[in-house]
Length: 109
Picture (cartoon, rainbow, N blue to C red):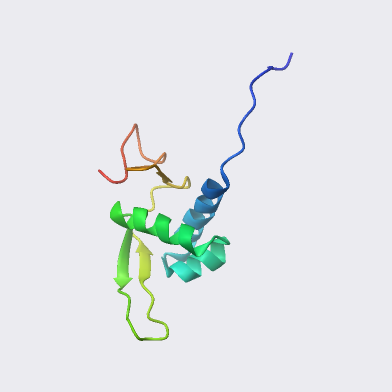
C-alpha cells in the first residue's frame, strides 16, 4: 500500500536558481555577477544577494574589485570554498551548508 498524506513539497523557485548558481560557480570558478546571472538563468538581484551571502561566509573572494568608470569594471569573484554539490542555503542571519558534517555553518567555519 502507498503512503497517504505524505506529499513532498516542491522546491522553492529561488532555491532552484541558487542551486543553478552554485553549479555554475563550481564550473566557472571565476566570474562576475552578470556572468552568473546569464549562465544560471537567474535574476541579477537574486545573484547579488546570494554572492554577497557567500562572500560574507568566505565562500567567495574578490579577485578584482569594482572599477568605477570603466566599461567592464565589474567585481570579479572566485569560488574559494567548493564544499560539494549541494548549494549552501541562506536564512535570515546565517548560511547552512549541507555538504559539511553535522551542523557547521558556512559563516562560522
